[in-house]
Each structure stands twice: as C-alpha cells, then as structure tokens.
Image (cartoon, rainbow, N blue to C red):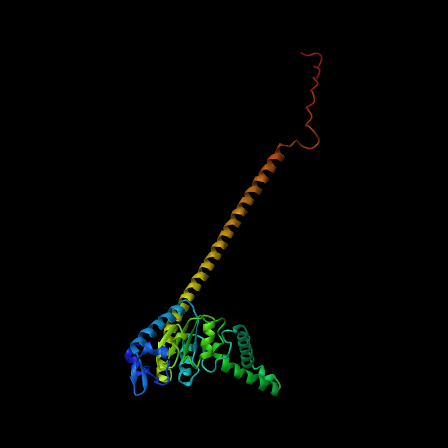
Length: 306
C-alpha cells in the first residue's frame, strides 16, 4: 500500500481550494493561506489525513467490510466507478437514489427487480414479449441499471461510505450520518468537515485531484480485500479438507465397527452351533431307554459221555 506524498498531491492540484468568498469557516484549520483570491489547502495535513483514511479503509476491507464509493459529479464519477469496481466494492456514480441507505429494504426489492430483468434480457425472454411490453421493460431495465447498477451486488448496508464532494452528495451524507455509518470524504474549502469522520482536505473540482484521492482509497481497499478473499479461500479449503478427512475417518471407523460386529456375530454363531452339537450328542436315542440284554439259559449237558 504505497503512500501518496505531498509532491503527488501538489502535481494533481489537490491544494487548490475555492475562492475566498466561497468558503466554510470550519475549514480554517485545513487552509495554508490565500493566493489571488483562492484558498490554498495545507497539503501536509492532507497527506497525513489521507493516510489515516487509507488505513481505516484498508483495515475495514481486510475484515471483509464493505465501503460504498459515492461520486456523481463528472470530475469524479469515472474514477469512482473504476476504482470501486477494481476493489469489488459498490458505488454510486450517476445519481443518488433517495433512501438508498435509510430505506434499504425497499431499495433491495428494486435491486432484485434489476437482477430479474437482466436475467430475462440475457436469456432472450424479453424478445418474446409483445413490442410495447418489451420496450417498456427495456426502458425500466435501463433506468434501474443507471440508478442501481453500481450497487447491484450490495446485499446489505455498507460498513462505511466514501464521498467525493459533500455538498453535491448532501443526501447521501445525511443518510449515512443518520445510520451512524463511518464516512470518509474529500472535503473542499466550501464544505463542512464535521459531516464526515475521516476528512481528506482537497480540491474536489479537478479531475486529477479527485482521481488521486479516489485511487489512493480504492487501491488500499482492493489490496485489503484481495488479501481477505485469499485468506477466506484458504480457510474454506482447509475446512473442506478437514470435512473430507472427517468423513473418511468416519467411514473407516464405520467399516471397522461393521467388521468387528460381523466377527463377533460369527463367533457367537459358531459357539451356538458347537453348543447345539454337544447337546445333541448327549441326548438318548428315540424310543426310551436301551433294554438290558436277555439272560442266557444254560444248555443241558448231553447224557452219557465218555
């Protein structure tokens, strides 16, 4: 996670604030001075605060946290979309839909509708409908893709919100504060820094300035999320391996138990057979006890003799 230095910030024009007549006094502590009617932001503070915001975002993403990237102004929208997608995070780059956070249950139904229409379009089901109905559903799909395409994968409320230009994204910032979600913000000299938890003082009207800040946060999140997903993959593989090993042990134990049971049953059957044979040998023959042998009658001697 390479740190963004003051030179990088200077070259991107992050130090240019608004005209002195268009400022928020609460930004006083982040302003270095004034030049030709323009406030100059103190980049030493920007560098430090950007690093704090990056570390917060990195730590959150490393635990599987979700950060919603928000930036709908033309100077920021492309960077928001690019780096949020690269980090696998939801984003709003076209239009903030009121209630996206505070009425997420209703928004979730619209996201489900988006997925349903997308699936029908990809499978060619819309082409089978009557022309008028097909055109109506295609128009609905385009509108949902514009408003909710960036949050289509957001199954729950995010764990934090990163905003470019607090004034433009006033509704989104208000919803995040209402739900007490941690917020990171690129805050120009005309904004109220107290509206966000992690202030990044800087120019929010120049494309290069928005790009460098969004990239810094986005790359930190992408790095942490990649490590998190790798760890999750390793953990899941270890759990699957342990499950297979447990199943194999259980199978072998069942086979051994079945073998022992079969041997024991065979021994019992052999013992029972042997006992039955022995008992059979001890029993008398049928018809009662054996008769005693008849007495022998002595034969008379012949008379006479010599």
